[in-house]
Length: 380
Figure 1 (spheres, rainbow, N blue to C red):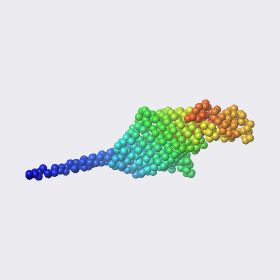
Figure 2: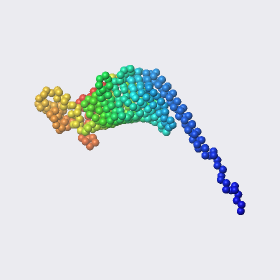
Figure 3: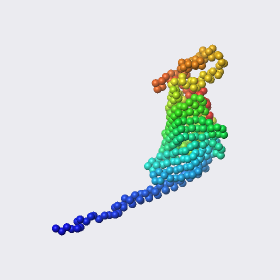
Figure 4: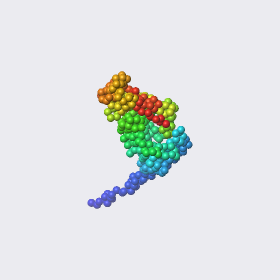
């Protein structure tokens, strides 16, 4: 039997089917590259226009060297030696740092992530810096469009604030970790925003605020801030002045502060006086308050007013003024606990005996119950 060679012949190959996926990939890559470079160019133009608008109202932003990169799957703006000058307010301010980078991932176009390398130097334009803020890591995130944000967060590790004038550097405040979160609760970024805020401090201290604040503490605070006209870029002094002029307030819904064995939880409201000092009141419930009284220096303050050798004779009178005070001057924990009982009604906090008492801010002067704790200078 004769076999037809045509029946055994292999099917004819179609080379264009092999090349088609590669051609499609090349076209997509070319299209994406065109989009990326056009978007990068538009971003650069928008930044230049924004800087021009800001400069017209006295807010000047500069980079010693600026670059846009991140191709192919992100947009990255890097600013070497960033600086900012705010000249429009009554107290001009200048800021500068070493490096700043902002990244926008392609798959999350409404999420910006930024990182800054310190130190951040703070002072007046044209003068030597007065303060320095330093850290081991400082990151920020912004969800939403830059001019219409929805929420933001800042995380700083090993943060410190120092005075760097002509004299030796002086530590003002520091913390192992600082976290600040905020979101717009109502209104918009451009008109009457009301903000939900949350602040967390780990092992923070501020010796300039008094002996009590010099001892490391942990703090968690949540609250609602109202009164800002908008969230436009401005110096923090300008923002606080606008807040005070509008009668804005920070309603603290919960504050939890722990320092060694002392634990305090409370809530209240804070505002600003015309000169920029804190004003308001928080109701605190404090556990182990007897550990707090010596830290407030109550015994030292009273002892300075009493002539030496008369404490024993005056102790009964002091006990009438504040039960346990006379015994506290003579030493001992039981009299101190007795003095704590006189500060306010007894309650319970996380299974521990506690006292409820007011923490008042009166034009910057801070008092806890009848005792002056610190005096905070004006914020602007």
